[in-house]
Structure formats: structure tokens, C-alpha cells
Length: 629
Image (cartoon, rainbow, N blue to C red; front, side, top):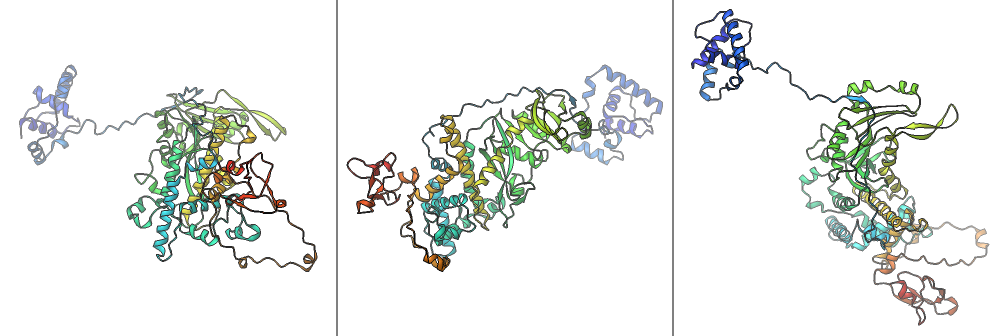
């Protein structure tokens, strides 16, 4: 052992309460105050005082000593009865680790200056002559229907080689169109649509048994081609093509400044590991779908929750929780300048801070348990706010001026966090007063009405889907997910169509509502692309026996029933296909029927085979050609 180490050991063996650190011992060695002979306690104290004075006058000597790193030195120190680590403790060994100071909250007005992106004027972008079917085809094009037909045929062969399905893309379009009509005209069972007295032409275009077989083998992927690893990583592998085509179109839609995030339920009560229960929802049981939407209800992005497989690492971000991780995933493709709105399930101060660093502002209700303890004590209690009167509020702003916490008293207290808006300027809202039995004006912070105005986009989309939802019963969750996204695509298409018509200045009475928009798409899919099914077998009346008539009814005179005019097919139906051929339907001139072409009042004997309506064909009027071009 060298002289330097020997002197250090001598110092450490002296019985004294004084603790000597490494730098002090090094200065003692260089100053020559350490000797190989034992020292007294008074000598050690005097040497320490002298070394401190010398260290105060020289800054370079404090950084000269470096810990030993060579193998020989470490072996010699370990072999000694008192190692260097035990002799001279580390300087920072007993000091506590400094934590970053939490920012304090102050009671003051929050006056943010957000750099938000302005909403530009809506652009039609060549959609001025689009039909409802054109909007719908943006989500499900011909490539998708060919994929469905191919995978369904494969599934049928895997089940029974001797009975191939031989389905076409046109047949599956007709199947979807029939289901869309059943969502509008609801009957308890599918078989009732084929009953003679309840027949709906747009639904019964496909024979009943063929209808069931097409729906039974409805598939989107090849089950045998999917590996076990993919099945474990992605529980939605059966419907992944459907999710991809819808999501790709949603991501391309124009985005306004204010957006909202909320959860959406896909109703399903069957057996699946993806099933969730959300209390308070109209359909509490089903698959949970997290959605990013505009205030008009236009869905811009989404993903279905599938437990731990939802996150890349198998678990959500520990700092933000599940709600914050959902916000991070839905805002991956979001640019700067947007303002997000979400409820207390997603809101926390760390997620607001993270979004603010990305240039995205946010507002949402927040749980009191997610606030700092000192802030909870500063906020007034509900009883104190009630004594101050209805409409009173407390507002606290973080000392860096980026986030505010607001507690407002209405019928109940409302706790909100925001990085976009503050309480002022105050607005006044109309509320009913039970004591005075009249409406009164209650002061309301600006954060509350801005939240109410922009938060309901996902709920609005849910309500429009629920109006005419496809509700055919099934035990297969992939089929239920497929029908949900069909409904979602129709609602998205209608919202886009409505905004285009308003931008073009179309009168409100001339804009198609959601009901007629959905019927148009259903009729076009069921009859427009491929026409009616050839050689359709007549329904067997034995399955639906008619009730026996009484003797009194037999004695009544039979009234001649008036023929109801055939409905005019949609524009997409009469402009597509090659089955629009004229035939001579009547020979007697007294049985001629009125032409159904627009602004034509003549009568004719010719009608279209596919459209089943009468159209003029003569030298003066070529209504048949005009109607189909």
C-alpha cells in the first residue's frame, strides 16, 4: 500500500467523533499534516482547521482528488482491515435527494392568449354533384366489397367444400342495403320481411335462404392465414380491414379548431373478451370505442379498447393513466392550435401540461382527487359556495400562468380545469328558481358555456346512429362491429353532405334529412349496382299461413283495388347497370300508364324492366333515354 493510502488509514483509526471527507483528507496529505505516527485528538482538530483555511483560498485543490479505479488499488483496499469506503464516508451520502418544486396555485383571474388555428370557410372540393351513395362509397369502395366476397367464399369452402358460396361483391352490397332498410323500417324478426303482407321490395331482393347464407359466411380475413402471435397482439383481427378503411377516411376529413374526446359503445351482449360495461350509457354493455369528433358530430379518429393490448407496452402511461393515454393516442396526428374538450375521466393537470407543450389547448371537468393537496384546501367547500349564492365561483391559476382550476356553483358544484379559457368575461344563463318560482339570470364563467358548446360531438353522433341503427340479432361480435361502422359511415357521410349543401347555399327544405339519406343509400345498394336478382324463387306461402276469413267477410262485395304507382328509383339505380331494357307492357290504349319522367304528362305502353316504371318512347319524346342518362 502506498504512502497516501497508509496516511488515510492512520487518520481513520483515531478514535474521534469528527468525520473526515475525501477532499479534506487529500488536502491534509498534500499539506503534510498526516504522519505515519499516531496523532492526538487536538492535533487532528488543528490540522482540520488549517486544511479548511487552505481549501477556502484555493479552488483548484478541491477537484484534484479522483477516486481510485485501477484493479490493483481496489484489491489492496479490499484486503486491508479498514477499506477506504468504510474509513471516509461519501460527502453526499446522508443528504436527501432534492425533488422538483411543485408549482403553487394563486387566486387570480386567468387570462390566456391561446394561439389557436382559425376555422376556415368550408370547401366543397368537387362534391357539388355527389349523390348520397358517392359519399358512402368513400368509406366502402369496390375493392372492399371484392375483399368481402373473396373472404366469405373462402370461409364457406373451409366449412364445406361440396357447397361453395359463390358470392359476388354485388350480392354483399345488396345484403348491406337490405340491412340498412331494416334499420329504418324495423320489424322484430327478419322472416317477417318476407311475409306476403309485410314485404318490403328493397329487403327481399335476395331470397330468404340466400340472405341467411350470405350473412352466415360474412368474413373479412382468412382465419387460417392469421398466426397465433397476431391473434394475441390484436384481438380485433377479425374486423381489422373494416376498421382500417373507415379510419383512413376519417383521418382525411377536415378538422375544425374545437374537438372533443369521449367514449362510444358498440352494443353487444354476447360472449367476447372485448365486452365492457359503462354505467350511465344508453347501451351500457358492449365494446368500448374511444372517439375524436367535431362539435357537429363528425368522427375524425377512433380506436376500440381491447384491454392491455390497446397499448404498445401492454400498459397505459403511468403518469397520465388510462384516460390520459387515450388522449395521447387520439392526438398523435393532431397539429398545433386545436382546443380539446373531454370529461373528468380523461382530465388531469399533467395531461393538460403535456398537450400545452405540444401547442394543443384543452378544457375538461376534473375529479377533486386529481388535484394537489394544497389546492384542495384553498378551494371553497360546497357549503361555502352555496352561502355566497348561486353562480359564485373560485378560480386558481398556477404560478406559471398556464393552467387554471375553476369551481362554480349551480345546482351542484362543477370543478373544471382549462388551459384555453378563464372565468372572465362572465356570462349570464337562465335558470329556474324554486323559491321564487320564476326564471332568474345566474352568472356563469366563460369556461362552462364553451365546454358545453363543443363537448357533445360524440354524443351527437351516438344519437344519430341510434335513430336508425341496424339491430339484427347476432351472436357474432365481428358482425355487430361491422354493422356499427356501416351506421357510423352513413352518419359521417350525411354530416359531410349537409355541410356541403349549406356551403353551396342550398335551401334548408331542399337538404335531405338523415332518414331519406339513409333510405337512398339502402335502396341504391340493394337495387342500383347489380339490378334485381335473376330467377328469384317465389316465396312459399306455407311458411306464412294467412288467417281464415269469416263468413261475414265472404258475403261482402269485393272492391276493386287501385294499383299504387311504382316508386321512382334513385339516381344511382337508374344510371348504373345494363338491365334497363324497354318492354311493351300493355296493348290496349285504354290501359296506357302515365310517363314517370320529370315534366312529362303523356301516357305510354312501354316500361323499364329494371325500374318497373312506364316511360315514353316515340318520335316526340324520348323519356326512356332521358331518364337513364
